[in-house]
Figure 1: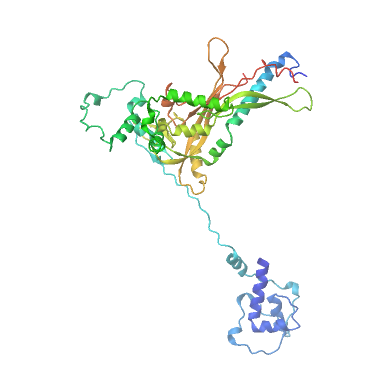
Figure 2: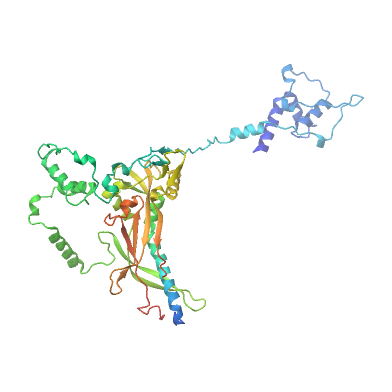
Length: 408
Length: 68
């Protein structure tokens, strides 16, 4: 590209000069594109040419050196290899002009750092990314203590205020009854499920309340069970149950004590598993997910006597360096196409230990549990928190079946 | 042909089988569905009814030696 530019410019400029163009056509010109050679030829020529004044000065780069003259006044003919090739300045400009316009890509990572004020215990939080949701904002003293907290406000609790009669605060009795049902009884009813109940059941055109006379869940479940056994004869073992449990068999390789023999593959049946993604999806819809921390932060203790002295507190998974680094990296990673959603982490914590089920006998299971690190350990570790999800039951291998003893 | 040439090989062989089993179990647990969620996240509605893209990340794994 550059060499082509050199030729182009030297030819172009020489043809623009009438004198040079004349010599280009002459037989004495050996065809060299070098301006220097041309100038020497010019010096040898004695032909009078009438050239307009404006064209007398050739372009800057082709200005010939003044010809060296001998004492007799004859021009010295310098051999061609002494000719100096003049540098040409146009090539880089041309290259720049031809080069496609490339905008420099600058990625700017904005960290919206945020520091909370110190609390009663001189503890503060430092966020790298400003949190969009603070689950601790709704924490009550009862959630932080394992005993009933008696707040001084209770002593002065006002008498229950007078409420208007039932449909209040809802529009009509239907909504009142439904919301009353939602807020009472078991606390496993999620908003989504109640919405689904209204949309898919109560609002359905073929939903007739009169058909529910004598309805019990147990009775209807029995009818459902009978119908599957009647139609299919027996249960399909591979079909997943309501909780997406799957039963699989695991292939393991056992080496054979013979040279150059590939390992033998044994199948261990009875591995029960649940999809991790389905557990995450189900948990995110539960009430307990309101306590999930989505943005990691560092916790510091500030010395009240010297505010410069800050001690890092390591207490939760979501205050750990590992989570902060993972969160930072996630924010820097390119987004999914056309996705502007906030990116957060579901912190998975796996735990596995073989458990004996009875004190007598050998009944035992080898479960694999999963916790969410998004949940504070003070909630997660409670026995009745329901924060532990069992995701797999690993079968046992033993020589009892004598399969491993002999290879058939 | 026997897998066990000597009775003393019984324990190491069982250890090997348990180790193989646990690795295969994890291979089945971290399936394509999980890897897809790990790379591209899953769109979930959080309890504050804001939809976010949730990426599962494994932070801890505590278990005793399965070989035992």
